[in-house]
Image (cartoon, rainbow, N blue to C red):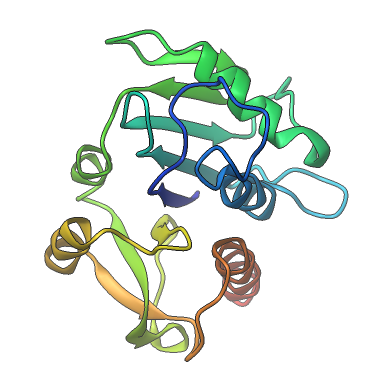
Length: 191
């Protein structure tokens, strides 16, 4: 199982929005969900996506999405799935909002601390070239939104994760996730 941890610096933490862009660039989150979970005619069963929302009014919120039978997701309606998930949040509980979709109050750092026994990478164009990395079966990738990974979280990652590069350019968040999925599909098919 591969995991992606997406940090949304301003993603709205309550479902009281309709416009993805005006809700703290939730359009980036929606595109990332599509890139992480969808194939042309299927949903990936080998991906766990974590979304950390740090916007108002009640940050942070952690949404977890993975394939489960009955997952009510379509590429056309990812925004409504996220919005509906946020409405189901309950304080001090991890709530199963839908099959394969959970929401809770959890910070980025707490989530990463729970994963420290795993193989954690973060994207940085100055990191080690991805082609030189020997991946295990369950890699975890940390990706920032259009503003990147916040400085205090980046300092934490530098001590606890490995910086890798997928190239010299800055790419959209969703493009990075698509690239990583395609790269890992090919990488694991050759083993």
